[in-house]
Length: 259
Image (cartoon, rainbow, N blue to C red; front, side, top):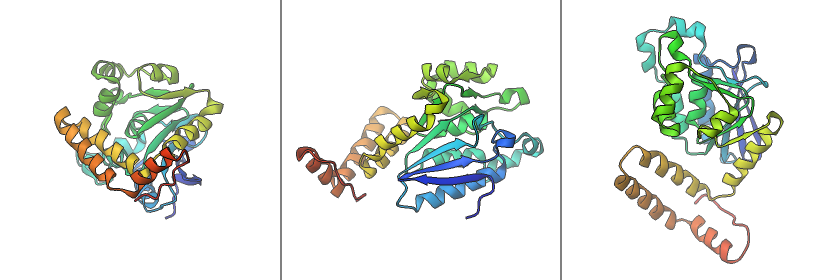
């Protein structure tokens, strides 16, 4: 596929989807969202990719929200489009492969919601998180009212959404919005470090751990425990489980085969 608004690069098993609109602070227009969806499909089929990192081109912005010029023209039916921002972010959240948001600057509106849809968020200290949609008399409509509350709690989520306050990397870390915060020149190194820890694990276990957490979180604990039990039953039947336990007892590095 040919991409005009994003770039895809790869370093070992780590693939990067880079939003490439720095002149517009990497604003997320419809075309960019369609390209992100296409890139996810492409990387899903690539067995050499074990983890996907989202980031923005340049040093100033991860993604500064929706493209306001397009937003002005939207009608009520646009929210139901198959590649709407909400649906693309749902796809990221339920993606088979682990995802990391490497937040290198402004993550506002849809950019903040993009980070929230990833499994893990790593931020530079100069990152800025916020959901300013109410200034436009709309609400965060790509998961912001739901994922943010689940990540940081309802009270803090309401404070951020209703006031439109902006948080830097350190503040985001204190409330649990990001799991790591580092100086800007250490951001990629820290992201790779986190990714390598994930990539060292059994890939099937990573996939089913994601499924159990995401699906279990949407239901009661008893049902979540059943999901967990069934996921574990699947893993107990895999060659990778046998390899992982054998490698542990033999004090060697496991060689997982994704089966």
